Length: 454
Image (cartoon, rainbow, N blue to C red; front, side, top):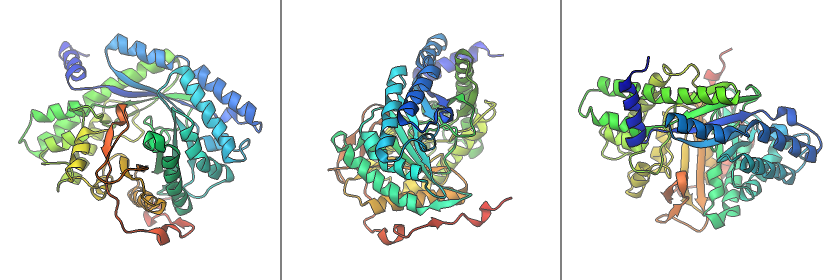
């Protein structure tokens, strides 16, 4: 039974500590839309999305009013478009028509973003996969709300280095195609290893083929709540520190569980998962870096940062799993540079480098996220960064990802402004030594020995 003290505490977390539900994401299967006629396929896609998601935004707004819980984003994820369009799309330009249809549907129902303009190529590429990947720069330059992701590796299959090399080229091409917007298209493009089927967060969300026809996934947030809780136990031992994070994560997740159940019931769509990830914003006080510094680091990036992040990630999961029947997605703590004021400040003062961020990704939820790099960074170096992150995910049996933004026309010392939740970022240096001969080798990096568990 919920008592009045818990209600008051939750209200305080919302009003003073920036607690929110970061997203309600409706996953929609488009497998039944497949058709060899491109025009018919696009019509089926538009009709199904607009039919199932017609009340998504209004329902989210109603829940906000009824419970006083901010719900920042309402989003849609779809079956990876390479699977849906394979029979009808025979060129990259054909796939771009699907991107336009998805953008039109997203605007019609009023969601912030739609994810799933995606391909899963961890072991090889079909003709449809390659055509979709080649279409990404044009698709993201001609749409506003469509997000794209490509899974290039997994613990079970290894890493498709042909796909890695191609994605390095596509990241660079997307930056060029959107250079008038400071290469913003790259903020809507993620390259994964071990991508989950039920991630509600953009830009990497897609609706996995094992999922139901439609589901509701919810992503919670609340780094400001965790930081405030830690302020009350300064100087205490690690046991107290861990217990505080764990208990706070439980409370945050219960809010997400309530929203998920309400949205599911009101929309008549099954509840999928709660993603426990602490997702920061550029707002002061809503920072994962702030949590790490509250633990005792002079600056995020200092020695001890990886250990502090590992502790945070683990305790968030331990507290959250007790608060929800179904936990999934990424779950843990995001470390996007441009979306976290503490990360931005650390990068500006030189305490945080790409190499340190890479080390941190070994223990956090995802990977190198929202990092602005010089616009003249070679595609092969971007491919090398992707390969490094994929290797971390493959060997450690976890999700890793890369969302880097080579900002055309900008270099080290410059700053780029993306706006809104995407924030702003300093241009961070990339190692000046190349890896062209390595990434130009063809084929796959094999799966690690511990992947053979059957």
